[in-house]
Amino acid sequence: MKQIILFFKGVIIGFANVIPGVSGGTMAYIMGIYEQLTGAIGDFLIKKDDRIKNLAFLIIVGFGAIAGIILFARFFSIMLSANDLRLYTYFFFVGLIVGSIPFIIKMQKDMRPKPARVALMIFAIVAIVALSFTGGQTALTQNPEVNDVWLGMFKITDIDFGYGAWLFACGLMAAGSMVLPGFSGSALLISLGEYQNILYFVDQRMMVQIAFVGLGAVPGIIFFAKIINLMLKKYPSATNYFILGLVLASIYQVALELRDVADSSWNIILFCIISLTVGFVMSYFLSKISVKK
Image (cartoon, rainbow, N blue to C red):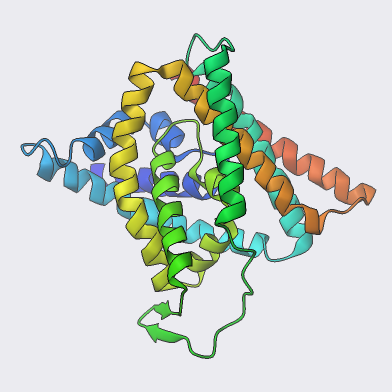
């Protein structure tokens, strides 16, 4: 029974990691397994005595998270395929992202705006905006390729090596951010211009593209889980300002995604406001639970 509950906690973490503005780390924190999760990841290669125990824990949570990602990737791929639904969905994402900001600020008692902290926040914004111009592709044409090859349930498609290296880098960065409470790895993927593409790869079971992302994700989780925990312990407020910059950069990227589907009709604007409000309330409520815990 304990393993089943742990698996479903993993599913919830997977759901959260697909939704921009909702952090998988926050959900792990809410469900009481955050410290165990980051400890198991960070100590896996160091503490030999606990390696089997940590491996079993990570396998159960990991398979749950994969199941959650696959289930939700299909849903959001559909939501982003039509212009009207895409418009409402991205406004919902903006609400989720903005709603997570109070949690990031409240994570530390001392969040006074000092020059060095503000500089770190600006650096994070500039870095992510610059990356979004250099690496991301436009939305994929979602049509089947003639030369696709199926290997069981997976599709084998051609990929440019340069784009594969970029997907590796995206997996590396997003995976590290997914273990951090208050910051969404999916929001970072939006900033990098690859959120919709990676959803499509997962939904269509495109093995080569998923493999590049996965190869980056594994070392990203191990390395950044250790680094982020260290930075939060030694420089908590400065690190939170840096995270805040990453979050603000993702809002900018969502705005770019909305340029081609913007509509000034009053009923469209009303539904966009409702979507944004629902997203904000949902994210703020989840963050508030984390703070109280």
